[in-house]
Image (cartoon, rainbow, N blue to C red; front, side, top):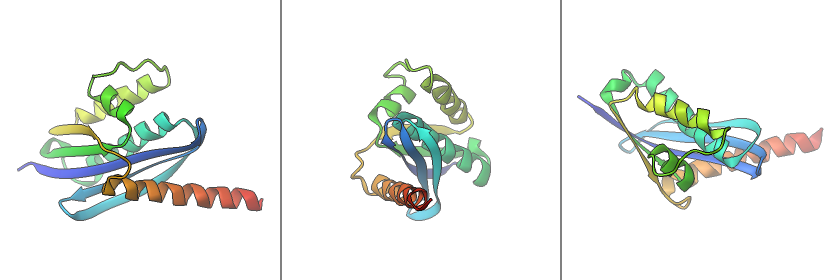
Length: 146
């Protein structure tokens, strides 16, 4: 039986490049399985978006059993990244090519993966975005105290 999971991802960069973070939320139906936010250092927004997707797919592959028995619906607010992953746009950036290739390799581990663009206002993505902003706020506050 194929398990279906839903992932919402987001990447944030304050400045481009600037302080960046990547995050995801994984759901099995309405049940939240995992939520994660990770600081990336000084990176671009596109780097953060791709990293969020890689983190989410890796987590699913390692934590939820055999990925060959899993269908993933992944939602991102990055139109560019989603279109690149779906083959509608070429990846021109030398920095983004290896990230795209990594996601494509991860995708191949699963029974199926779909990438869909949604607005940041979409509930699942807006929650991940809020997590990233809290993380970046905390890091900025700590840096200001030094």
